[in-house]
Amino acid sequence: MKIVVCIKQVPDTTEIKINPTTGTLIRDGVPSIINPDDKAGLELALSLKDKFNAHITVITMGPAQAEDVLREAYAMGVDRAILLTDRKFAGADTLATSHALAGALRKLEFDLLITGRQAIDGDTAQVGPQIAEHLDLPQVSYLEHLDFDGKNTFTVKRRVEDGYEILQVDGPCVVTVLSGAYKPRYMTVSGIVGAYEKEVEFWGFEQIDVVESKLGLKGSPTRVHKAFSRGVKAPGELYEVDTNEAAGIIISKLKEKFII
Amino acid sequence: MDFSLSKTETLFLQMIREFADKEVKPLAAEVDEEERFPVETVEKMAKLGIMGIPVPVEYGGAGGNNVLYSMAVEELSAACATTGVIVSAHTSLCAAPILEFGNKEQKAKYLPKLASGEWLGAFGLTEPNAGTDASSQQTIAVEDGDNYILNGSKIFITNAEYGHVYIIFAMTDKSKGVKGISAFIVEKDFPGFSVGKKEKKMGIRGSATCELIMENCVVPKANLLGKINEGFSIAMKTLDGGRIGIAAQALGIAQGAINETVKYVKERKQFGKPISAFQNTQFQLADLQTRVVASRLLVRQAAFKKDKGQNYSTEAAMAKLYAAETAMEVTNKAIQMHGGYGYTREYPVERMFRDAKITEIYEGTSEVQRMVISAALLK
Image (tube, rainbow over all chains, first blue to last red; front, side, top):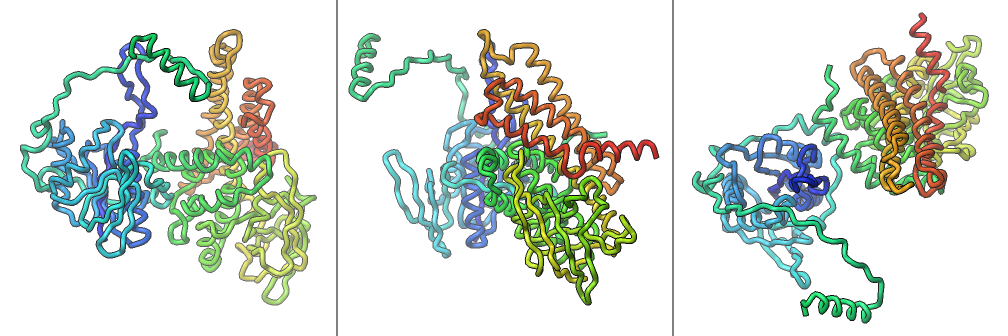
């Protein structure tokens, strides 16, 4: 069984502070981490490796320093790591990113492709499903759990707004995983010691299978209209009362503000 | 000269900090209060390779080095000093002497089990009448065919109750004094070996510190560690390495106490402002953190020299002396900055203060470290 996991290096948004005068993000000294949904996806792959001896390739697209997350993945136990990096990929929105990744994935064999649901620095949840469309593969998003029959069929539980669905899907297929689905394992000491001795493959435009016009800034239809930080909200009032009384208070407050 | 961390060290710190924060810190107060050996933590550490960090891969270890090992003990101790000393005694005092002085068969037999954490290691040198004067050993070993028969007892032995293998020192030739001591690898199931009473301690209360009793204990000759009558030198060299571990433990306690204090002084308000706004708080924290960073540089220097195969005995003594006394000063002042709350068990600095004291005593008292350092200076 062969698995490919797409991961992304993101700033640890829990560590980001806002400059109080300019209202902009202070990114200096903010650590970079594996995106939490992707890390859960990595754990799903590693658990399948434990049980079914699956071979795991991780792939990421980004600048040279994104290599660090691939080393971390090695320390957790993956078998192969590819860094997709090329000036031609720069400035990509989600569509151009998914085209580049799909271009690389056309060069790889796999039964299961795992991505995180979404990245904490963009929250779009688009790249995984877009890859599945480009490769014309079945996809299951918002995955909470996956069972493998040891042959070619996956039974998956996916979260939907009012509950969950249980589906069966044959490989090769794409799943996008929720961060709470699998608790990522720690890196092992021997994994860490060996992580920088292993090979990280650098792939550029020449190594992948995609039309150049779909890549980078040129291939990105998204235009950012305006970026702004939300104003500070007032702390609000807190009432510790029973439900009936609470409903009464809410109604009177809404009336006060002429909302109802 | 390069003081920056390597990529491997950075990745290692990321892992060990997360592990200490999520798996070790939540248990620290309970382990202390109930004097409970954290078996579940040792199992988790074993799985990740933390019980065999500097042991080479060929012997089942993680293939790391002493710098990584010292970082592990520091970070674990910042969360829980009991957990730190379990790893330190196991690694520095049991696995390390087997790696350094053991023959091929002994390394093949014991190191994979120790490095994987399947077995826990301990070290027995101290006796009721042989503390700092370690040469006054009363435990004796007498040849008997293919075996040595050991009689005597050891006290204050870290990991004793949960240990599987012990490095035990005994007199093989009383007439030769220091030059008549030998080292043995003793398994807990050897006939005549038993673990005695458990000590009730001021700090590191979760570590199982007990007496070891040898009553006609049968130890195969194959388990003589190093050469006959060279045990005292093995003990002293082993303790040189152990001091890196204990220095790292003291350093961890000190940094842990500062971290707790920084959090507290920002929250605690008196006279209408957080106490972190008072210059007294600021200056004290500045002095303490400077001492902690100085301790860290000493610890890493000693570990680095050991990794390079250089003589590190004086550096290890300096690291332990300075880090231990720093841990005492930092935890003492951390309580003072916490005020009355710091004196209660609601805040971890009370435990850290009790844990810090032992680092000035075991694996060579601060006075012994001064002897080692001045002897090198005045030779």
